Image (tube, rainbow, N blue to C red):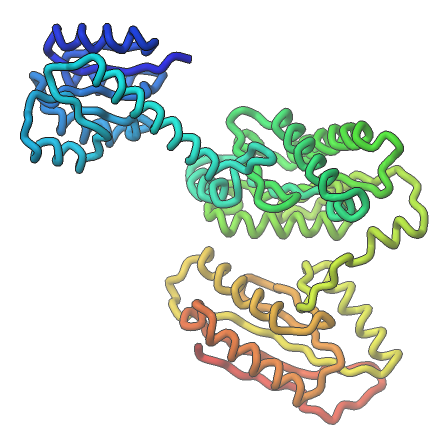
Length: 461
């Protein structure tokens, strides 16, 4: 497509010279005589020009005033590059124009050769800048927005739009890399991205926020039933492309799990909405995968795999391929089952354990829920990094975290808590919240404990 430039000048001769010179190098032009004509034209036009050539001295307003007005326009028009035309040879005037944001100055009388060369240089520079900006915003593998960009967009979108904020995750994706290699894993990501684009509406916004995790704002989604149908359609298409990619059959079941939060039903804070959607996704993962969950809904929809599996395949799927050195964080439902199992195990083998409940209370009572969640999340991550991989933790609310510490006695639990508080004091959030805790041994049926029943303390950070 040919470049397009708008020229603003009340000198008819200069307009004709500029138009003729630019036409000779294949550039389309629109000729206007006043600043008001330009502003009206930009506000009404569906398209945005590639460059503005503005004479500093026109009848209704000077070029500086025009440039300031252009910089207040919306929909990408504020960033249109501007070159000034001027008969003023004063260096101060040129400096003022560049300071306001003009990218170049062309002195009159117009020399066609100088005009075309400077315009071509300006257009080439602008295209490079646009491409650099796009590269900084786009995930190159998928063509979706990258993590930083999509999160910035979601901050604004959640404030004004209505729809569902969805977190999408490919089930058992790590096995693609482990069993078939990273090239196949990358190919799966690309194929799924194309599938997702075909199932999105033009007004939906999507980005890649992790290796196999995507963030989607579905503007027209209103009901849980719509979410379920969308999930079923995505999984049906995904299974189809997997069958095409693995003609001999996939060695393990896979699918797409989706967690969602409703906007504005669940609020307008992006961080809070993401937290809720991510929790809903965790619920799907714990109850069968390949389905969907809307935050706050008791209904979980799952798509059961129909393939028959052998013992080794099931074992490979269930194994934790890379065992983390840190504590294990779980959703509430999974934690309840794990806790009950560990109680049975310790009772059978006479084990010992301690329970700890941390409460995070912001120092500022006026703090909003989004900041509160950020502080609690920071503390949870600190706990997770500080404990053993045999310890288990769950976030029971936005303000409280429960720990189960197997094979821990009274002295050991105080060592753990002291280490956590010392690490918290090094955190950038340490002066924003008061940390309090309750600690007590786990009492098993039929066993007397000589340790204290409960230890409650508060730590002011």
